[in-house]
Image (tube, rainbow, N blue to C red; front, side, top):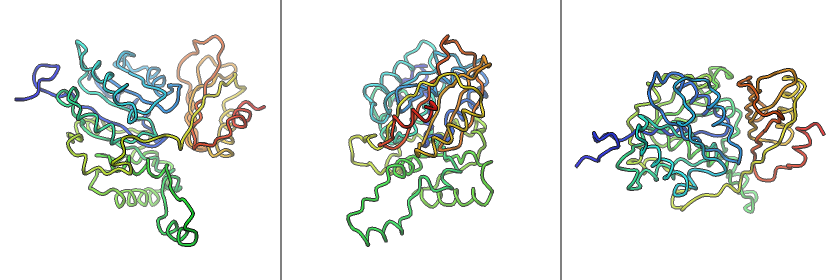
Length: 350
């Protein structure tokens, strides 16, 4: 018997999972997708690593008519792949139990999330009969990968191990990156405007070689792609788990002990250029992976939204401040061992 969906016609609600490392451009791609929804009812589930929800706030300030706040569900201070039973299942059930359920659900995972445990959750009985994973889209920060931030050199590792067997060359960043690629139905090389064509070609060739099955790759600038390409893939990914290997297969869960995050309260800043230079300098000095948040600038009624990957930052004035204190908030994410006191002092100019 065909499974009975919430619509009563046996149709499962399709779900698209957007994954990718920190700063790959997931939220920007999602904003572009919503802007071209053309009245289609799309619900968004946003998951972030850390206690402050920046991405959900960015989406709520997008100004898109068909993007009401109630269709954006935010899960913070956790990773969906680790909190399936506590957070994910109840959230999805609440969405599909609405009187007017969404036509499509898009999940933006944390940049540190492993997609496969999330895919496995769609085998849960209460979910499997009512939803299907239409596709997993993995965004890649092409300039970052070209710079070698998320890639290991197996030959070099083998040579070093031969010279000193006591060395531990585990690279948690590379493991997350590999897992996100291996889970994909579509891989989007983003920010290609920041590379020469030959550099993008090299990144794409390396990805195609690394992924163990044939996957479509596309190139994008600012995550601008036709929704017809992103939605309607029809992968039923929950039925294809064996073809999506993970570095953590066989483990019940995974830990984020390799990464840490904290929030810095930022007072009003003198000017845009000055704050961007300070953020970039601090990121480079302390090897910070990601910074994102909002800052107040003197003489400006609008809030300055900033998003940084390494030392590269993008910014825009998005919405007027509603907080009378105009205190900004920045989320700092990096590998465990960040010198929080020093970073805060540097950001505050102390």
